[in-house]
Length: 304
Image (cartoon, rainbow, N blue to C red; front, side, top):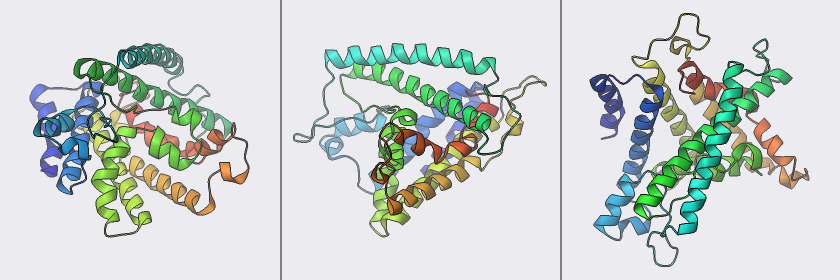
C-alpha cells in the first residue's frame, strides 16, 4: 500500500498536467500523512477516540489535521465560536506577515544579506538562514491557519495547532521538533514510526528511525514537487529545479537527530543557566548554519 502511495503523485501530476509547485505540495503532503496514518493503523497505535466508531474512524483518517480528543470521554473536542474567531484571526495575521516577508525576501532573491558567502558561521550567511527559516515557518503557519480555519468551521471538530513559533520561542531542541515545529507530522511519526520501533528497540534508536523517516519523506517531497517533470523556468533565473541536490534534506534530519541526542545527554540550554530570553537563539543556532540544506530544494524548485 505504501509503495502505491509513493507513485500516486507522479501518476496524478502527469494525468492532470500539474506543474504548479504549490498544488503539487498540497497533494504530496496529503499522501505523506496518509502513509504514516496507514502505519499507525497497521501497528494499532491510532488514538483511542478514533476507534470508538466506524464514523469517527473514517473521519479521523480523512481529516486534514490532528484531531483533539477529550481525555475523559475520548470524544473529539467541539470547536467553539471563540475558537473559530481565533482561527480566522490567526489566518488574517498569517496572511499579512507572510505577504510582508514574501515582499521583503523576494526583493533580495531570498538572500537579504547577499550571496557572497556560504561559510557556515559567517554573519551574512547566518542572517540569510535566519530569515529563510522564519519565512519557511510563516509559510507553514499560513497553511496551518487556512486548513484549521476552514476544516474547524465546516466540521465543528477542534484540531491541534501545527506551528507554534518554533524559531522564536523554543526552549529546547526537543521542544522545537516535538511540540512547536509541524506538530501534525510529529504526531503521525510518533504513532506510525516511533512507537512500533520503540517496542523492539531503544528510545535512541527509535528516535533515529523517526528522523531518518522524516528525511526520506522530505526527499520524496522535494522530488515529486520540484524535480519530477518540473515546470519550465527562465534561463537567467537564479533558482532552477535542475540545481536541486537530492540528499540535502536527509542530511539535515540526520544532523537534527544528532543535536537532539546531544541535548538529551548534556541537558537543555535552560538547565545550563542561560537566560530564558536567550535560549531560543541557542536552540536555533544548533541547526541554523545548515538550514539551507533543508530549505534550498524548495527555493530551487520555486515552491517558496
